[in-house]
Length: 130
Image (cartoon, rainbow, N blue to C red; front, side, top):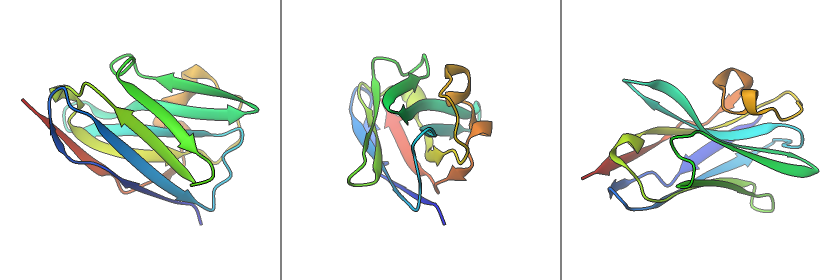
């Protein structure tokens, strides 16, 4: 059974940094997406960043986080990361790690869409204050 367990959420001041971690188990990631999403009451669920690997690696980011967030994965540690720098008030949200079950070709139009993901973690909260 695939399991995703997030950690690293915290309260931080604007301009600060956090690194989220997602330890995954029983998951085959080749030709599949792994990503980070966030949820707020006002915006709902939003794709933040995605990682796709099939020989080559492709990374996808929401426009709102480009240049500030970095997604990475340590295959030996079975961990997906989201490095978040220069955090803004609007980054406050519950952050979820997610993974797809179906092999795909890695399209930008799919990578940040939640309907292409089948496994979800329990979430970790990030609060950014002024």
